[in-house]
Image 1: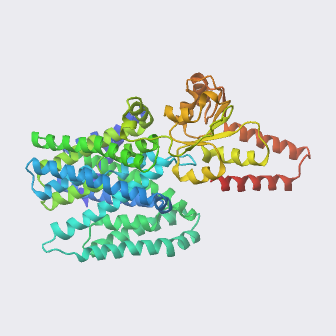
Image 2: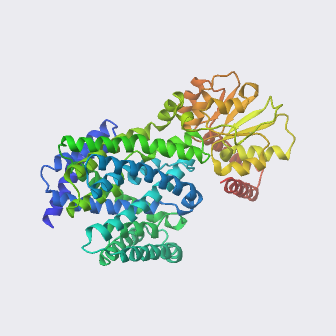
Image 3: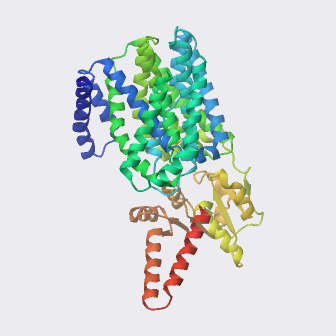
Length: 552
C-alpha cells in the first residue's frame, strides 16, 4: 500500500509542477503529462507502473462508456460499423503482414496489427466534447466509430485471454462476457433510469452510485476470470448518459477523469525507453498506419457512403492515435511474457507520438481539411457533388441559406405560409436531413461549403443573398470569405468573430445572444407598460419552446 501511495504522490506532485508551466503559457497538457512520466519512470518500478496503467485504462474506458449516446450510435450505426470493420481489417491486415515480413512470429505480428488498426476514444473525445448545444455530424460519426472499435477491442482482449494467455483454450469466456454486457443493458434500460430519477439532484449519492457500478462490474469480471477492462466497459454502458436524469452522475463522475487521466498519461510516459533500431522500424510502420492510412481510408469510405468531404476528413482525423485498448493489450501481454520487447517499446512510443500529434490535428482539423482540399486530396478520395442536388434550370435572384438544421427549416416553413418574392436554396452537409430537405424545399445542394463545386451548383453568382445560419465557426468564416460580390450575412457567437467575418467580407452578422437579449428586453417593457399580459408572455414563451423542440 505504501508503494502505491508513494507512486501516486510522485505522479501527481511532478505533474502538478509541470502543469503550472503549461497553464501559464496556455500549452496543451498531454506533453507535460508525458514529460512527468519520463521523470517518474526513473524512480518507480516497472511492475507498479504496469498495474497503475491497467487501472487507469480501465477507469478511462468506463468514463468513455458513460458518455456514449447509444441512440446516436444507433442512428449512424450501420455506416459506422461498416467503416470501422473495413478500416480495422485493411489497416490491421497490412500491419500484420508488415510484421511477418520483418520476421515477427504470428502473435507479435497480431499485436502490431491491433495497435495499427484501433484508435483511441480517450484522446478523440477530449476534443470532440463541446459546450455547444449542437454536435456536428462528424462528431456523432466519430463517437459511433470509436464505440464500434472499442467493442472490437473488448473482443480482442477476450480472444487473447481465452486462447493465448490461458493454459487451455476457454471459449466459454465469450459467453460469460456476453452475459455481463447483457446485464449492463438490462440495468441501463430497466433499472438505472428509475434509480437516477429517484436520486435526482443529490450529486454526492450519484457519484457513489457511479463508482459502485464500475467497481462492481470490475469485481464481477475478475470473479469470472475476465479482464478488468471488460467489466469497466460494461459498467460504462450500464450508466451511459442519454437519459436526462443521469446528468448529475455525468457531472460528478467526470471529476474522476481529472484523477485517472494524469495516471494514464504519466504512466505512459514512464514506460518509454530508449528505442533500438528494431523498435524504431516497428514504430515507423505504426505511425504510417495510424497517422496516414487510418484517416485517409476512413475518409474515403465515408465519401463512398455519401458524406461530404469536410465530414469525412474531420471524422477520419479522429482516428490518428493508438487506442487505449491497444496499450492495455500490450501491457497485459508484457505481464504474461507474450510480447517481444521491441514490439512493446514500439507500441508505447507510437502511442506517445500519435497522441501528441492528435492534440495538434484535433485543434487544427479545419485547417488540415482546407489544406487537403486545396491540393485535390479530397476529390481524389472520391468526393462527388451533384448526386444529391436539385436546382431549377431557371433559378436566379435567389437566397442561399447555409444549414437547414439551424434556421433553414424555419425559413422554409415560414416561406410556405406566405408568398415570397425570391426562392430559397438550401446548402446542407448532414445526410440525415436529406429526405426532410427534399420534401420541404425545391432547391437544395448537399455538400461542403469549402467545395467550389457546391457554390457553382448553388449558382452563387446569380444569387441575391447568402445567409449562413450555421453555429459552426469554420463554416461561417468560409461563407464570409467567398470571393464574390453577392451580399453575405453570417451567424456569429462573439464580437471577435463578428469583426473577423466583417474583415473577410461579410455584409452583416447575426448575433443570437444579442437578438435574444433585445427580444427579452422588449417583452419586459411591454409587460411593464401593460401592452401584453403576463399570461400572453407565458404563452409566447411556450410557443417558442415548442418551436425549438420541433426544430431539434
